[in-house]
Image (cartoon, rainbow, N blue to C red; front, side, top):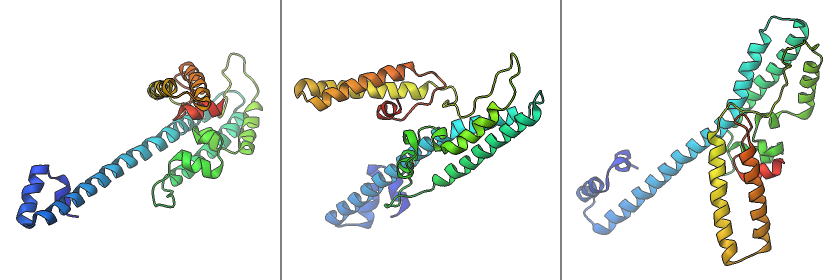
Amino acid sequence: MTKSYLTMRPNELHNALVKRIPEPEMRELKKAEIEQAKKAQRFARLSNFQHKRLWGELLSPLRYELSNAKIGARWDGKHLPERQTAFNAYIRLMTKLESKLEALQLALDDDGRLMTPSHIAKELSIPNKGVHWTDWIPLTKRTEVEVLFEAIPHTPKAKRKIPFKRTQRPNTKLKDTLLKRTIKELGNEESEQAIEPTGVRAERIKEMKRAITLIRALKPTDAVPHTWHALKDMG
């Protein structure tokens, strides 16, 4: 496909094809072919953007916590050996996970399309659909690091580090987007229910209303799932 055709406006494309293809029927077939190529190009751009956004939402909180842990590891205070042992183990685990997730971004499905975190999480049986980076850490590994942090003697008035908290960088945009999308979906379901009531839809409406309550209660640092279904499944 000639690249310049894909960037032409309709009138420009028509004039260019008139010069090259005099037969009207063949010209229209060519136009249809070009339009189909444009749609495929737009879909690819949208898919790549969505793919990058979803992986970014998973990796960003991990990298934020990793950065904080590196700062904590440099703190020169009491109980230094215990602190360094705990923080170094935590940092190693997160660094390993970061590399793993970066590699998984390139994973392809059977159709050759890039896979999203939730698709891979489903295949690997990751809890909570892998919505937060802590879901990707095996429980045994998590417990090992948690024990190391618990072994650090408590210092009065000092804030104790709690690893693997299900938090993200302070952000209300994700919460607002999920809330608006869920409220809109609820409105559609209620309209359908008014026209053609079903028991299944009535139960789904109840679940959505419960999910909306949970979404509204989320704090700016809480991990936000991509759909209300995931929030329901998480608790």
